[in-house]
Amino acid sequence: KENELDMEPVLTIGSLKTSGATTLAMTLAAVVCGADIPVTLIDAARDPDAADWAEKRQLSARLRVVRACDPIEIERLVRGARRRGEAAIVDAGTDPETLLSSSRLADQTLIPVRFSPLSAFAAVATDRLLAADETNGRPGRTRAFVASAVTPIPSRVARAVEDLILASPTPRLPVGLSLRAAFEAPFLSGGSL
Image 1 (cartoon, rainbow, N blue to C red):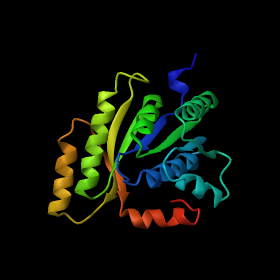
Image 2 (cartoon, helix red, strand yellow):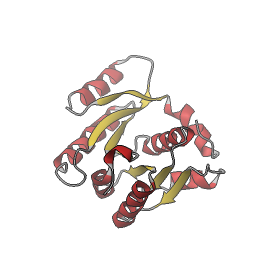
Image 3 (tube, helix red, strand yellow):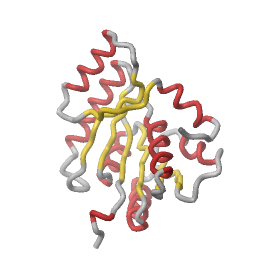
Image 4 (tube, helix red, strand yellow):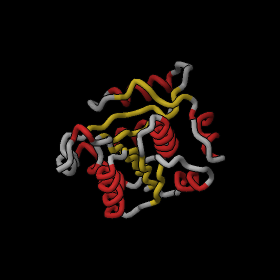
């Protein structure tokens, strides 16, 4: 039997609308790997951006990137990572079924939100989808919103986005990626933050 205290976490990242899930997944994978924790990054999004990123660079022995879109394959990879004592990060993309099946395996699901009302509406819809399914899957799993495009300039749009997210009972992480385009650029050439 697995000892819950010794297990590395499984994170799923995704939203019903593209909102920086892949950039967030790759950033977290690089940070976890940089902390000498082995990690499996599962690229289950529609576009294989994380898998493409992995092909452009010499990966650390502690970081493994695997492309998998089938729920059974994703579950096999997550279970394997847990058995090996690795963290697992699933870039679930925008597909509702992939979001649900991946979230059922995770300890925490992160719902990225960009600086736009459309992204905020999609994030709230994603949260509702996952809330309706919370009795399925791993017990005790949690979810949180995370900003994937924080803007330092307060505006009416920023307040509207914040109000949409704060209306949900799901917590918002106090950190996020600032000015997403600046963080995305290193990944295009196979780098990381």
